[in-house]
Length: 388
Ligand SMILES: Cc1ncc(COP(=O)(O)O)c(C=O)c1O
Image 1 (cartoon, rainbow, N blue to C red):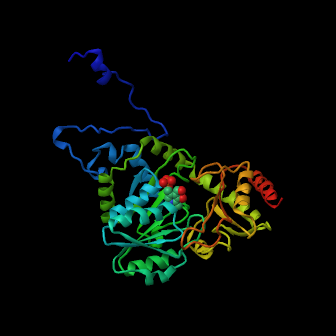
Image 2: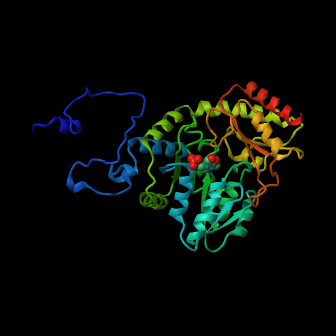
Image 3: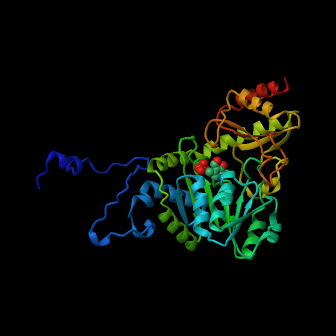
């Protein structure tokens, strides 16, 4: 049929040569997914089963990222979410209902706590926060209506490593699912499923993205019934992800091994240097005996990444701790670690129940890919200003 130039803008007959191959995953964008015929149209979310149906459930770029994360974590199904926090909320909304109870470590990433106390509580879901060192003692906190136990290892900011197998054993004895925020290990330095965890999530935003330029999360499971519940919830909540961000994550993933290895070496050197400084009371790095749960890190993890905290000896005021952070020239001040730039954030923990009494004396560091001696030099000059 003949076409006006206006129609040609939309329906073109122009052809390009076939047979192109490259090393990069193409970025497939699309809300509408075109069906081959009227009779096969359906709105089923599980595109791994039924083929592509709608952009909300992912284009091939999104599913490729899901497939690769699933492979890395040795799961059977992975769902990509718009961020790590979206993964946390999707898990809770998919698996809990009014009248249910969950246990969350007091060391958890703060927005995870806020979701429980400010939003899930409004829907009749109750939460108790437990000592991350609970191990097998968690059994005494389990209620008849406990459905989910969250773990995060290491804990945010205070870096406690949890005894996952002990928690899993207590949970499974009561038929309760265990979910792990495995962001610190990038899903590769701790084999969560081998330790009995039922659901893992991570903020792809951090190490897999690796360059501080995207927000994504993932949820991985080994159990088909969990996957069905998570997928059905994702469909109706409508949390779609950008294929462009997934393309960046796929690129970042290819250099994850070399970045993590360089970051681990540098972070260990910086942490060791800091642990010898007289201003520092404690270095909270999982590979150091001064970190709570270090023995579980040694037993369960394959290595360490680049986020750890330092606790100053009592003395400096909050203003002085802020002045130390502000004096740093290479470390930027900002959230979202796992990129190539080193970061420092000072916290005041006093107002969060169940957290150690470090108060304003704790600073979390993210070690990036700058030269280690430069980072140490930077810390040294900032520390000297603290004592000046
Ligand atoms: C341990 C942990 N889990 C989850 C998240 C949330 O990830 P996102 O920023 O992608 O929502 C973060 C972010 O800082 C985190 O540190």
